[in-house]
Image 1 (cartoon, rainbow, N blue to C red):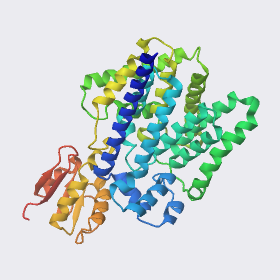
Image 2 (cartoon, rainbow, N blue to C red):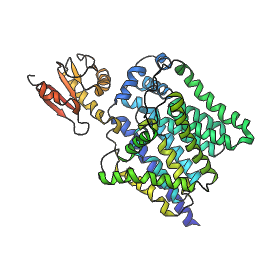
Image 3 (cartoon, rainbow, N blue to C red):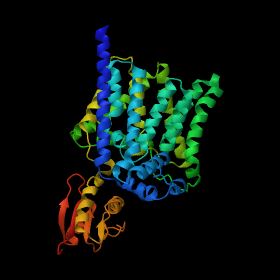
Length: 446
């Protein structure tokens, strides 16, 4: 018996050590990585203004609960990158806590518990959003916490968590509704108890935060999304498996075309005789997809793609892990392959979806040394450059316009799409960043 107890402790120690390492990496990234275009846009649109802007100027960029928390954090700690990202880092901590508790509940202290923790936390695309100043990671953390509460029959807490997840990011509406809907259907004999203890807390917690911003929503507020469900899912898979090019492309292509369809087919086969928990999560995943399709046709919403489909990663992973829970070890091979690929793409230097902003902080400090009056930049870099212009108080520098860099400027900050201006305008390169591929240049005569 002591040997069994010691083995359990080792498994818990491995899981906790991994989560501690990932949390430390999140803190490091939040403190050191350059601000991205979306974060800078949020800063200019909401965080640099009064509280009224968050509640009245609604845009898909406004992840209301997150924006409110970031506003508080910036007011308390200043307008640095880490202050804006602090709610996301805390959301990452909450996600790791929820994953640990959920996996121990579902898989006990077996080795599958450790495998599940790794599979749910090492995805590099998901990790990006556990430190970047956006509401997706916080929303998924609250959704995962709600799932744990739901499975352990703490319905009021589950409902409140799901409502807050939707308030953190509206993309969590479909997976939250999927779980609540299937749980309600399976508890039809106690339907009013479910309404009172689960559904009402979810509605009230979301409504209390979102009612004012959503009431100011304008047509076209939801402008992100794919034209087909398959295209959207492909973007999520691609960002997970080709997040950081450190693996041979041939291996990535094989995994991209074969691994996920194999896992999906396995889940469909194993759903023939599922246990209660697999029925709940498998049914909720199917209902979520059905709601997404209905939203596309009824309200012309785009299908989930890239970060708007981020919740599909933990959702699908959990369903597959439950499907293989009582199966031979061979069924775990796809999960091990995923974990290995995730680990090989370890990255603490940039957010892949905004890789072009990886060096913006460094570029801005170089610009500050030169004190130019007019700076022209590729449009993708304008928001973050204007943020650093304000933060570093570059007094002589005018705001960078989105009109493009093809004009007379004192400095040029160029992405590859605008490299042609180097010869056209006879520019002299001062600095070229290998990771972001950004070039800082000045007119050759200066």
